[in-house]
Amino acid sequence: MADAYAIPPITSTLKERRAALQKAHGESWRRYPSVIRSHIKTKEQPEPKPGEVQWSRSETIALARHQCTACHGLGLRRGRAGKFGPCNCVLRAIFRACFARYRYIVQYQDRIRGSATSITRHGRDSRYSWGRKNEEYLADFYLTAKRTLTEPEFSIFRLHFLLGADWRACCLRLHTDRGAFFHAVYRIEQKLGRVFRELQPYALYPLDDYFSRS
Ligand SMILES: [Zn+2]
Image (tube, rainbow, N blue to C red):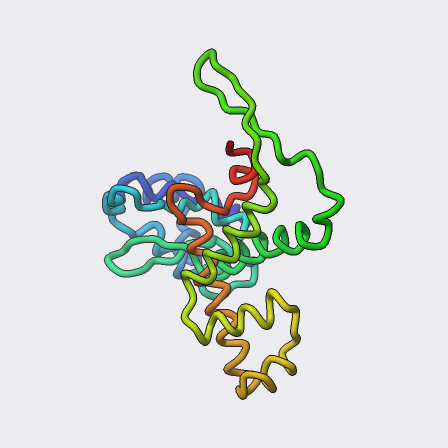
């Protein structure tokens, strides 16, 4: 079977997308899942507003779940007005990556060293600046969650993610049932995943950019 990911970029015109697809796959492109066909049929994307983060397929495809029934592993979903946005599976992956780093820093806080230096480059001027990147990250992670989540969501976040309580303990403490608890956990992961990526001026994700920034 032809490569399902060989889809023309969504920035090209409708005519160009159809022509490129037919050239690559012949008539078989009509049998693609609806989500892929929707990429082809989409009209040009509206211009992003100033400061708005644009999600691209090259970024989301690596984070998406292959078995995801909403995006079929592409990571992008068409929202209102034909605009593409990240699938929930991508947002959850971003949250989990940020949370994994948070846990790693908390666990090995005493042993991690050397992350305090960063170099600032302004043309020919290069200078070292000193900062505590790991501690800054922990604070940013916590404060962003506190600012973004509602009060009931934050108590679940604190209990389950920060204090490490399992679902039984959380349900007992918060007087909720298992289904409602996991729905809330998914909602929290999606909400925070989006904010960690879209945070202005400095996003927490990608983590490499966050830690290499001075
Ligand atoms: Zn998905």
